[in-house]
Image (cartoon, rainbow, N blue to C red):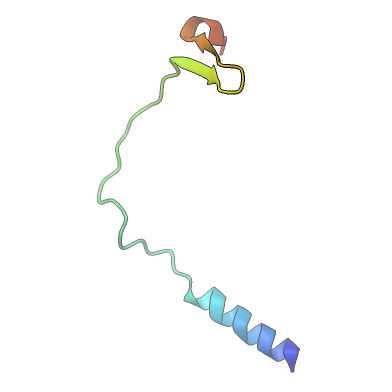
Length: 54
């Protein structure tokens, strides 16, 4: 009986999910990121854009 209950609940959860995003944005912004500084919070040091190396 537990097996049937688990199967039913799994089926219910899987069928309730949808990929429709009604609250999503109407447009996408095409942009790019640029690294300017990398900071290590536990040491308090930072690397500038020239020192990053990649």
